[in-house]
Image (tube, rainbow, N blue to C red; front, side, top):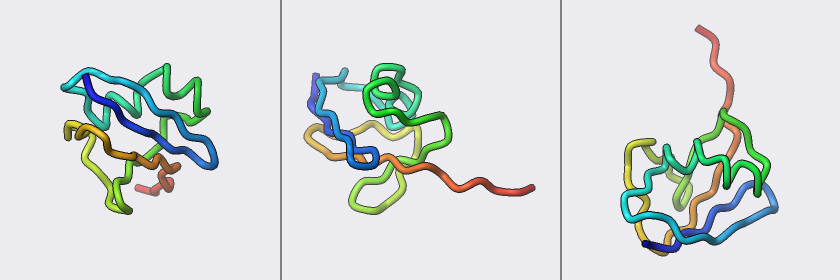
Length: 73
C-alpha cells in the first residue's frame, strides 16, 4: 500500500492505494471520480508533466488531474 494525493480543480483527496496502482487506474477509479467530480476525459500531471496511463504512481506523490482538450481528427 502507498499514499497518494489527487487534486482536481480546488478539491483534493489523499488516499491509500495498492502498490501497482497506475495513472490509468486513477483516471478510471469510480471512488476518485465520485469524490472529486471529474469525468472520463482527463490527463494526469505530476509537477506539470503529463504522465502515461500505464505508469505506476510512486508513493507520496501529488497528482493533478485536468480536463484534457478535445482533438479533431
